[in-house]
Amino acid sequence: MMDVMREWTVSGVSFPAMTGLFVLCLIVMWLLDMLFARLGVYRYVWHPAMFKLSVFVCLFCFTAFMVYQ
Image 1 (tube, rainbow, N blue to C red):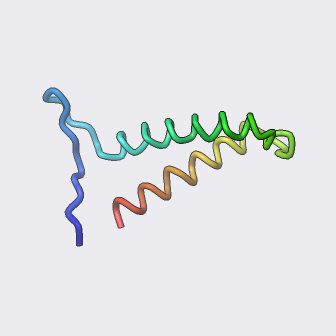
Image 2 (tube, rainbow, N blue to C red):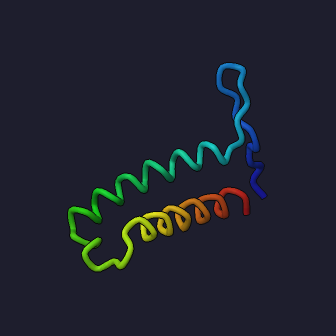
Image 3 (cartoon, rainbow, N blue to C red):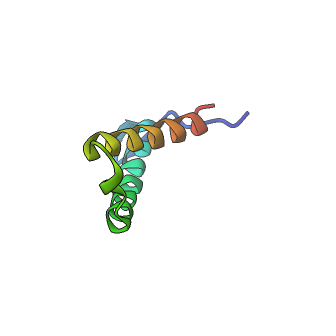
């Protein structure tokens, strides 16, 4: 089993590793949002804000489960 760092230290300040995953998922979601807007996916979605939130939650949970399995 792989040893996962539970905390990251940046300039003497400790952050949970989930903070880095959160920022990573925000960046990926921002890129997916631009792609979905360009492809016109939001025309077929009932509530775009709720769709964006659900995609972000799926991304974040997937990465967290992959790291902390």
